[in-house]
Image 1 (cartoon, rainbow over the protein chains, first blue to last red):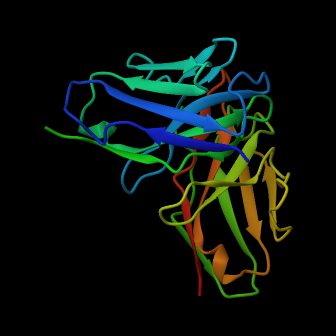
Image 2 (image 1 turned 30 degrees about the vertical axis):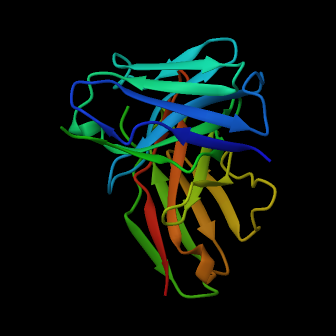
Length: 120
Length: 110
């Protein structure tokens, strides 16, 4: 059974870098049929797609976040990571990792989400 | 790209049918058959309910159905049950490997 679990600091200071890791069990992130990525949900607001990465190393980012985002993979640990730099209070959100079907572009498995607060 | 538009709330009595809409543009919802719907109960991870406009993943009851007309996609829940009370949000492919989401609709079972 596929499981995704986010981990990382729950509190980040303004202007610093938000770093999260998603640990995948039950499937290999080396699969060619899927992308692996991040979505966030600010308090009381809708979901926002952040970006996705393929096993081949292709990365796709939201145009609004592209200048601050990096998604990377560690296939040896079956993990992928998110870095968002120069954070502000507007980046406070629940961050989810998810598996995305390559053709079909749907997210068929999600992590439970982790709340990250940006505050000094 | 702007977020997809959903009504904030919808409601229905047990046994009734409710339809939730998701409006985009010809560059996203209207341009691709890659609309998906998700159910989210409070404090839980989202669950895929519909993909590629009208397909149901294994295990999703056939009370849930999806459709699309022009730039608007719809999710219909038939035979409403108490456990269907949740937030439902849509997503659409928008080209260039970009995904867009709707703001979510809170479904209340009266």
